[in-house]
Length: 307
Image (cartoon, rainbow, N blue to C red; front, side, top):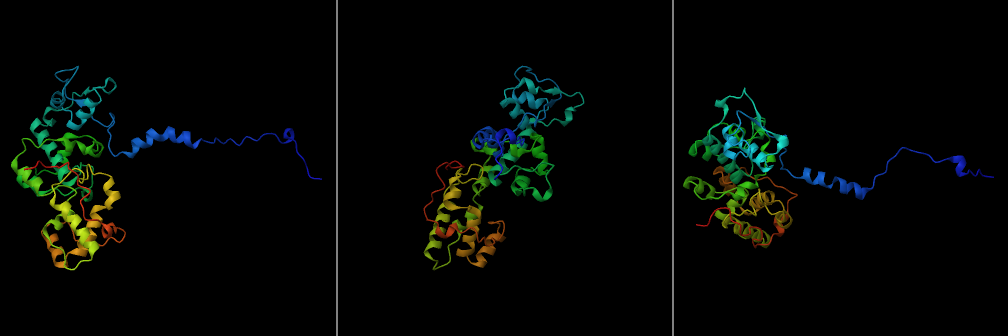
């Protein structure tokens, strides 16, 4: 006869395990995950709050007041955006030297350097803590025309004490071109970030007798290339639906370039720096083969003012 144990005999084991409720746990994690998923966001602990002296207006210092006592531009913007928090007070450092404080003109040149890089390359210049191999190439225009020929880290370190990637770069979209020098406007007119791989389609005709699908893809790329640059395409503000509609633009355009232009033409594009390098075939990026020809990605938010 099999053994029939009673509840009293067996007892209730305690395994010491805590079983979570998945739905409630997800709700508890939501704010943390959402915050961490964003590339931008600066903590008050990230900024340098050291100054050489009390600002002119101690209670409500302005941005200029803060710059004049040695606070860096981006740091000051973060502190002011936080509404001059009492729990993140500025600290006067008697050892701080006046000659280390950049002039407002140097600050202006540094923030212009960053702005230009955001418009043309969609990234900040690299700080001194970034290895040489990971630093962006600085356009000759900044060095030769604008006279901004110091190492790129000098300009970002002048206005920012933390990793600049935390400082949302979308501010560049809202800068007005009013009062800009003609040289800068002319340089922007040569191309902005997100459009380099479209460039050849504005200047080169396709090979004859293309299959219909490649002709449609060429027509789409040309339609975008000849239209004024827009914030919908610029990487800083790119509409996320573009990836769904067209796939990775650069990789698909690289494949399309290999398909619709001759080897000599592609070599010429590279030599003239129209494209950074000769594309390599990307077998997993085949969206271009089914592209329709209408431009459904540009939108109307043009970057440069219409002439």
